[in-house]
Picture 1 (spheres, one colour):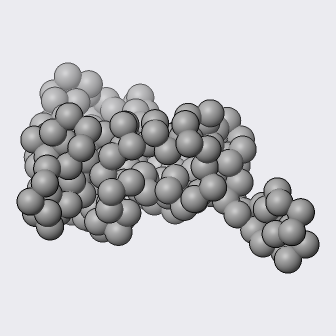
Picture 2: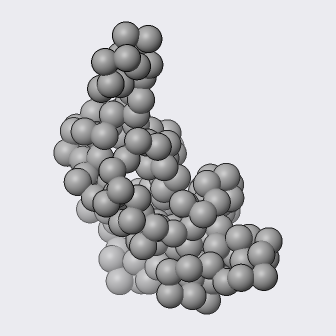
Length: 201
């Protein structure tokens, strides 16, 4: 049996809160009419269903691990990001910058929809295909380090460590990937082992 990891919805989530931002203001959000491409949590679930249905038909003898998207607003917790990072974030993930709380709520809704789909039993009838859910990305966060400013450092101030982000501040760096990899592997290994025990024993 082959093992596949699927991590959908990140781009959708980056624009999700634009809908609430647009509803709260008469002005449309920036970034190329972002509201026109909003994907709701329900639509995300439909898209994920279509993708998993396709995999069930085209890739038998597979175990698919679904990793719901991480909250993209975790990047905005680094309020001391350079200007270039703020510009890049505003272009590629505008709604996380515009409404952090709505983006966090959207991430929760996306995860709930993915969990409901996986636990619905839709893929439990196959003898050669299965889908399980991994929460490994749901707790992604930036480790903190002492502030670089001598005054703030003397006060013991701690800020999110930018070295855990890629140069554009949009994605985790190799350092954050390395930090999270053991926990992700342990979580997913436990899920896979439990699946096989429940299926074949």
